[in-house]
Every structure is written in structure tokens, then in C-alpha cells.
Image (cartoon, rainbow over all chains, first blue to last red; front, side):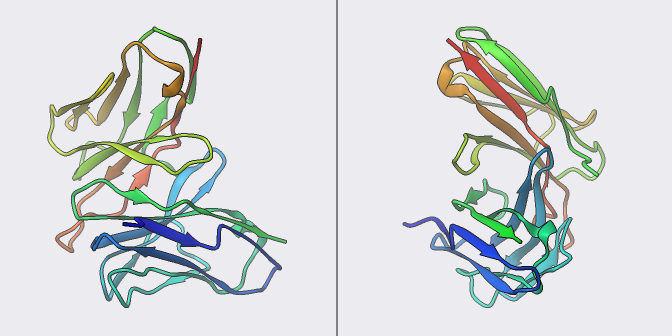
Length: 111
Length: 116
């Protein structure tokens, strides 16, 4: 099993550009989530999904969209990148009521 | 605003010493608490999933306790080793109306540095 994969590993965007961060898992996990990690702030939940077709907002959803058309994939879309979205983004998945498995992260810089 | 607080923010431990640190969370509306270990340049890895008041979990030299009535969990490291150096995160999970977890709320973490 590949576990949780994220692409790209690094990305530099200009203000106003849009892009999609990809996340996939091959463990048939129902629960998937996106976090951003900023110094001194811990991991903050952006969006999460409890199954295909079901998504909900987390703590910091503004400026991000998600969809869950399949169990395996949970892409995160930045609609119009802003410097405040410079961060490290982690995707995670789990079976309900079990530990989360994290992807390797995507380091995003918005100029 | 972090409803989940971890203390201390960082601590330095001599190799061989034991240590512990705290995760505080809202005592109402509890569903589960997770502990994760996060080494530099890696991704967080789960240590414990705790759901019942009074739970005690152990993995090697690391153990955790849970008090949901007063809203805290302790993580203990016995006989610290340099490889225990990492940031330890706790995550509070409230229930949701979707027969599943609600929104994970992570604390900012306790950074542990073990020196030989």
C-alpha cells in the first residue's frame, strides 16, 4: 500500500493564481481531511469528508474548496491564492474511530 | 482560538529521565482524544486513540491517561532517549451528527528535546 500520497511536494504561486493540491489514499478509509500547519498554530483543519459525496468545513475554510467524488481522492482547491495561504498542507485519512494517517505534506509559497 | 491547550510548549530532558506533559480540552461534548508524535521533516504519526474516561494506553516507554470529566490527558515518557525527541500533538474530537467524528482540533504541541 502507498498509504496517503500528496502532490506536489513543493509549489510556488503568484497572488491570484489558482491550483489544486492532490491527495489520494489506497486504504479504503472513509474519513479524509486537509490541514494547514503554521508556526505556533499547530495543525488547523481546513475541510474534511466522512465519505464520498460528503464534505464539511473545518476551522479555516475560507479561500479553499474541496470535493469527494471517490473514496480514494480528496483534492483541495485554492481559488485565488493569497500570501496568507503560504503554509505546509497535510492531508490525512482514517477509518472512523481510528488513528489518522498523514501524507508527506505540500509546502506552498504564495508570492 | 485554540480550545485545545498543551503545556508546556517545550521541554528539555536529560537522557534517562522521565517526563510528562498535558493536553487540556473542553470537558463537555467529548468523543475522542488522539495523541500524535511528529518528528522534524516527517509527518505526524499516531500514538494513541482514547475514548473512555479513565483510559490508560501504553506503547513501549510512552503511556497516556485520559480524564474526560475534568478535560485533560497526560502523556508520559519513561527513561527518555534521544530518539524520543519530537513534537507531541494531541487532538480533541467532538461528536458530529453524521454518525462519525466531528472536527478535529489539534493543540499547538509540546516539543520535547532529549539530550544525551
